[in-house]
Length: 356
Image 1 (cartoon, one colour):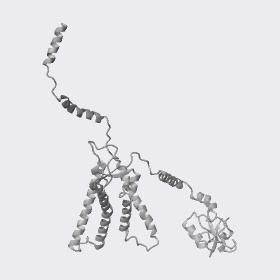
Image 2 (image 1 turned 45 degrees about the vertical axis):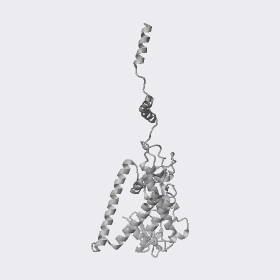
Image 3 (image 1 turned 90 degrees about the vertical axis):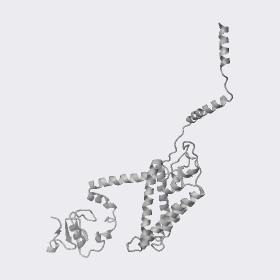
Image 4 (image 1 turned 180 degrees about the horizontal axis):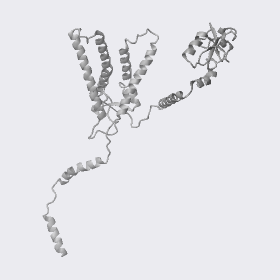
């Protein structure tokens, strides 16, 4: 039986066709894509997403930096003719924007706001994209020289020319109906261009909120995208000022809550020893009217504290405030009497009652 089985197996194997030449090559080509996809699936690919909040914060910080530089520059010319810098304000803004561009983007460095948010510009046209666009977000070269120059012309030069054009057209009154038809058409064209730019900026904002790319139209046209500058970001913004602001806000709210509940007379009496009108500080102050700080022309005394006032000062204060208190001792003033006349000698010496 064993011999018969051996003969049968040998005969069947001899009848099978041997593999053709190059069969292993076709098998390799067929299985290689599967093996490659299996190998790539083991690597986690993280989509490149840049924080939109960081990009907006960077733009705001750049604006604040330009404002601080402008404030310091204005202080330098504070002693010159008033209004001198007002007529050159567009040139001043353009000069400051140019300085920021010159010492940041032109030398392949981030702007102050981008540096605080760990962002930098990269040329999206030369960014490495393999299948899915991703790795760490650090790949890709910076902007080219042409992109840097166009960025300067679009931000610095464009804003300067547009500001001058608007001020010139408004000064020449191109929008008046009495102007020449050519000036009127130019004014309408300027308004249409401004409306189109605002509409395009709004559309770009909606796209940015959805995709997280290109904050403004200039970045979208130049394909200059903000990406992370380093894998680890150290927070450069201190919370010290924020904490101080919160403390003062809570303190002011507490005072606004407590002040209506406190009696002003008791507070004034408590602060009287620390005030400048303290009678113990100098004996010569007793001869002065505490209201007008001058020698009383018609001296009257307040009762019952016996402090001397001008008649008109004391009378007007008592008429204005029925619960008037003495400015020296904080005692309620109920009557007033002519100074230097003994009571009871004449009708004029009787005290004048102020309150019923």
